[in-house]
Each structure stands twice: as structure tokens, then as C-alpha cells.
Image 1: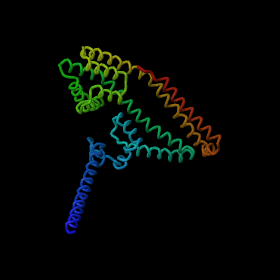
Image 2: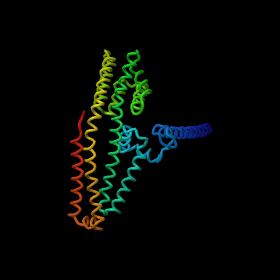
Image 3: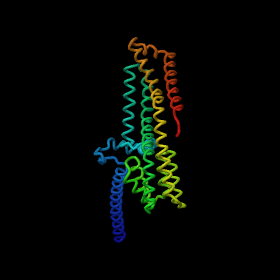
Image 4: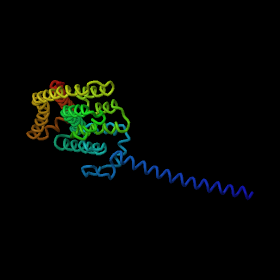
Length: 313
């Protein structure tokens, strides 16, 4: 009996020691995981290159775990903006609330939800505009990128080394994007995968041609220097053509945005001339339907003008 009691006490003490060790390991592992998430998501009290501290760190961490947060993160990664998904979401909500309150105070309560939707559309349109702007800048740098790769390849450097050298010499956004490609190659990704991710982030016909040339040359070899030289000249010609087309269509694009602004301005002017006219108009179903139809026609006109002025070069 004495031996059984001692054995029971010993087993109990051993279980307690193992339980304390397990709790300690679990807590330390959880703390390390939280620190790793903070580093990877660039949140918390980390100071960025520009000296700015991230805001809404806790909310940003929770938002990244949702589907909406992941979609916003993908959109932001293609724009080059120094924003986290949490910051963008908070700013977007503030914009929607501000436009909602302004519309209610200046026009009528009926326009609050409409201007809230306009704020939501504006926020995501801003991301699309920034992404397109970054793509345009990258396309303008493609001739120089192709020239650097041709010179490096002619000097006997491997394609991986040439890409790393181009990432150091070129400015943003090409330098930043090629740095991501070089980092992907450094951790074991193939050239096809790394360049394919670059093509997904910044899709364009010029980049597709360059990526295809580099991938084929890495697979089958061949006169990659001559191909890159010819591609450089072609990209320079396309760059000038795109600039001419953009200049010719600038007036049309300005008209597409000026017409809706004139319509909203005319509505505000009417309310100033006849105080309370918008309130009386939106107090009935027919007036509300007329406003919705007119705004829909303005939006349709904007879309049609943008589609007609969109020329792929």
C-alpha cells in the first residue's frame, strides 16, 4: 500500500510538472506566433521606411483573416500604396459617412444612401485608378528594363542575376516589382512562377511579351540578346504611340466626368434658387424615381463615353 501511495503521488507530481511545461510552451509559442504575424503584416508598433507607424493594428489583423480583407490586400498590393487593409477600410467608412452626412445636409435625406454608395464606388475606383497608374509607369520603364537585361545577358550574366541587377538600378515601380521577383527566386521559385506572379500583379500586353521572351529563353536558350534588343525598340515605339493616343483622348475623358458634375451642380443651383425644392421633389415616389433614373442615365453615359474612348494599343 505504501508503494502504491508513493507511486500515485509520483505520477501526480509528474503530470503536474508536464502540465506546467505544456502551458509554458503553449504560451511562448502563441506569443511567438503573434510576433510573427505582426512582422509579416507590417502592423503593430513597427515603424515603416517613411517613419510612419501603422494605425488600427488590431482591427487590421482581424480584417486580414476575412475574405473581404484578403481581397482588399490583393488590390492594395497592386497599387503600391503605403496602406494596410485596416487603414483603407476605416478611411473608406469615414468617406462614406462623410458623404452621407453632407448629402443629407445640403440636399435631402433621400440622397444620403445614394452618396454613400458613391463613396463606396469612389474608394474602389481610386484603387483601380492607382493600379492602372502603376501599370502605366511600369510599362514606360519596360524599354529600359529590356535594355538592362540585354546588356547583362550579353555580358554573360545569368537571367536571375540580371533580374536582381535590374531591380537595384531601376526606380519604382519596376524596381520594387523586380525585387519581389528576385526574392521569389531566392526562396526557390522558378523563373516561370516568379515572372507569372509579376504578370498577374501588373497585367499588360508589353509585359506579357517580355515575360514570354524571358521564359522561352530560360527554357530553350537561343539568341536572347537579339530578341531583347528588338523588343526594346518595339517597346519604345509602343510607348510613343500610347502617349499620342492618351493625349488625343484626354478631352473626351474630361467630358465624361464633367457632364455628371454639371448635372449635380444644376440640382444644387435649383435648390438655391427655390429653397426646399429638392426636399419637396424627393418626398414623393415619382420624384424619387425621377432622381434615380436621372442618376442612372448619368452613370450610363459615363460608362458609354469611357468605353468608346478606350483604345487598346
